[in-house]
Length: 91
Image (cartoon, rainbow, N blue to C red; front, side):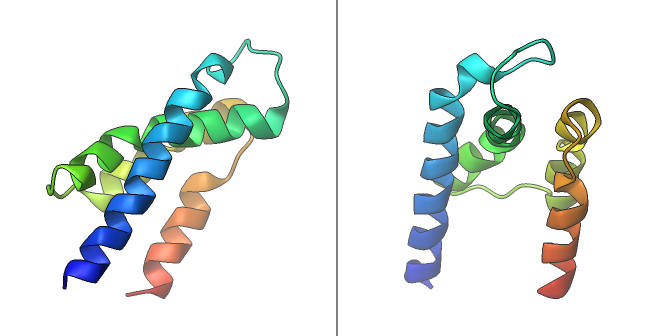
C-alpha cells in the first residue's frame, strides 16, 4: 500500500521538522510559552520514530509512548494517555 507509506513519511517528516524548529524550547527550565514547550518535547520524544519511518523501518509503539513520559511529568502534559487511547481505538 504505497499511499499509506507515503502518508506516514509526510507526517514523519513534519514531526522531524517541528522538532528542529522548536529545539530552542526544550528543557524544564525554559521560560517559553507552555504549549510551545510541550510541542517541542512531543516532537523531540518522537523524532527517532519519525526518522525510522522515513528510513522505511518500524518502531515499537509502546516504547514510543513511554518516551512521552518526560513531557507528561515535567510539563504537565497528558500525551502518553492520549496516544495510548488513540492506539487502542484503532485496534
